[in-house]
Length: 218
Image: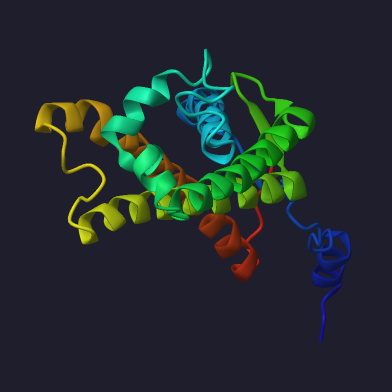
């Protein structure tokens, strides 16, 4: 039997809240290091791809060699993959990796296009932030391209190892470190960093979606 006091208390009690927590779209903010790497690497890759895909015009004696591709005379002597040895042997590896460079660069530019057109400034953050679908699309392109860059560069090193350093073994060790190992090593270090950071963001987003966890807005 419900007493009058209990019934009055029940009537005056507010119904339990059914309001769901507000959801903040998943966001992505690139690091300053990532943007710096794009600013340095993309012009160099475009330059490199032009040299590779326009050979022999870009090689010594070719109509496009001077002045843009003059440094490749030295690099072709350091790394025969870029020199006359590989070209005369009709080695397809150089052009194949050059074509992949074009694909990767295009994917990076898709990322940057989405970043600059859809990104928004956040209070206290100097870089733009992408959210929702734009963030997912941009991150997918950049992560996939970084995996391609890393894999291709590792393959580039491995083909030298398994060929007995056929294209670079003639160099003095000091020259090899300065002109081949350090420059090419950058395309392992920075893509590895991007794969780790961006891959972690993708995993975080997928984990949140799979558990149905709501991200409460502040």
